[in-house]
Amino acid sequence: MGDRAIIRIADTGVGMSDDIKARIFDPFFTTKPVGEGTGLGLAIVYGIINEHQGTIAVDSIPGEGTTFTITLPLRQARQQEPAARSDDERTHPCALRR
Image 1 (cartoon, rainbow, N blue to C red):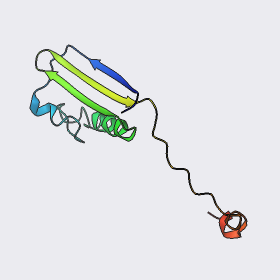
Image 2 (image 1 turned 180 degrees about the vertical axis):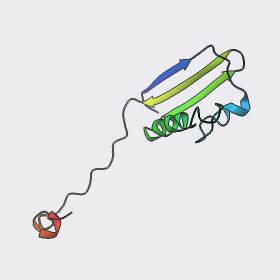
Image 3 (image 1 turned 90 degrees about the vertical axis):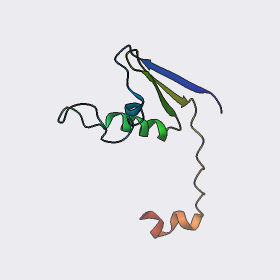
């Protein structure tokens, strides 16, 4: 699995029920009144972490608080290098327009 960074963010707030916890990463889901939130924050966070090959998990107990655990790789997997162009492709006028 390789080296990973683990970040935990916890509070001692009101926590959340299993029903709410199951939906918190859904786009546009919010527990706030209409006009006070878009419900995009955690959906965006989830997407960014996923794009970096990481994970985010939530543990919450109503009345006790919530902990988010983010795990990220310390190194990105190497991407394949693009195939080298031939001399013809580098000097051909069409190659200059790419």
